[in-house]
Each structure stands twice: as C-alpha cells, then as structure tokens.
Picture 1 (cartoon, rainbow, N blue to C red):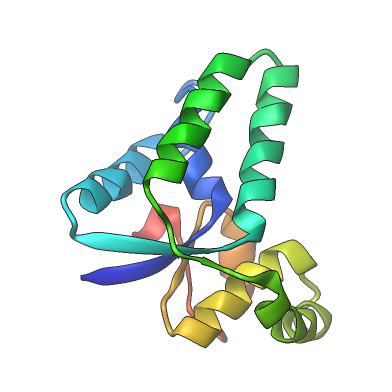
Picture 2 (cartoon, rainbow, N blue to C red):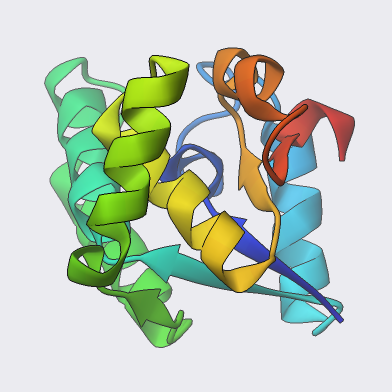
Length: 143
C-alpha cells in the first residue's frame, strides 16, 4: 500500500465543484484508491486549519455552502487520518522554508514527507516543480 502525505489542496477537490477546480478527476481517483485501501494518507495537524480556510474562501465566493463544508469536515474526520503535530515538524519546516523560499505552511507538509519517507501529494504545481528534485513531493496532475 502506498502512503501519501495529503495536502489540503488535494482533499479540497474531493468536495468543491469540478467546474471551479482543476484536477478534480485526479483527486477523486486518489480518493477511490483510498476507499479501496490501495493508498493511505497522513497529515500534519495544520491540514485542518488549511482545509477550513479553503472552505471558508469557497463559501465567501459562493462556490460552496456552510452545510456542505460541515459535511465535508465530518467525512474527513471519519477518515481518521493520522495527524502529526506541528511541534514535531516546525524546526525542519522552518529550514525547508528558509533554504527553498517556501511558505511555512507548505513546508510543514514537506517536513512530514521527509520525516515519514512518504511522498507529499499536492495540487500545487508550483510547489511540486520547485521542490520535487530535492524532496518527496508529487504533483497531483502527474500521479
């Protein structure tokens, strides 16, 4: 079974309208593999803040509604994704952010990928392009 560090950018595509999102089919394909136990996911605890932020922005832009966001949270909570504390990751994340000119938020996911030796799967093509040569980062469009 393949284990991935799941970026909130991928999980959000499971719930947001495909007309507003690129790579929805790829994200849903990954979710099907998860449902069939072909892959599993782990997350930094920051994931919950990021997914809530994505949903809030989508609600503000009238691309999503509160009830759907609450249902999505329930679904994700029921996935029982192993979450790793930012406290354990922040030193490495800070180093990655500083050396590779990345945000601390993105670097937390990369730090978990390095620590766990599981690739980060992200819908952020810019992040994948800038770090894939040095770190286990995979772009959703290439999976």
